[in-house]
Structures are given as C-alpha cells and as structure tokens.
Length: 92
Image 1 (cartoon, rainbow, N blue to C red):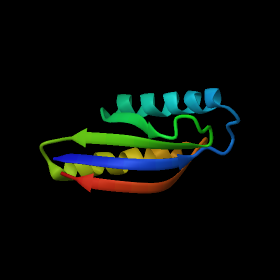
Image 2 (image 1 turned 135 degrees about the horizontal axis):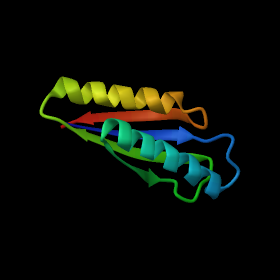
Image 3 (image 1 turned 90 degrees about the horizontal axis):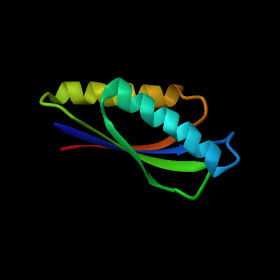
C-alpha cells in the first residue's frame, strides 16, 4: 500500500527564508529518521510563512501505512514552529 499526503503549513514566527529552511530541515529530518518516510517541500519555496510538504509511505499492509501517516501528522501538529492548515491524503 502506498499512502501519499500533501500537507500545507503556516510558519508564523519566522521572518526569513533562512529561518523557514531551518525549521523545515529539522522537521524533515525528524520525520525521515523516525518513520522512514519520503518527505519533501513541494511548493511555496520563496515564501517564508508558508510551505507545502509531500509525504509518502509504502508498506505491504494498509493498516500499517495508515498508522504511520497518522503518527507523522501527530509529529507535524506537535511541532511548535508551524501550524498544519490543510491536508490531503490519498491511498493507492
């Protein structure tokens, strides 16, 4: 099973692209190391208050893929530097 999510987030405290990239670098590293998911910034590269992430997990068990994606969303929600605003999840 492949589960794919697009997650839009707002960064309210950052005041530069450098600060945004620092926050994203920490978040992406945490997600990749903890859950072994593929994650990248898809859009809003030049805006320092907004980002759109693409996250993919692959497993032979549908339930496991769903649980991994739910845990990923919990980590994103717990990240104090940003707020998740819009999420789209697709199952293949």
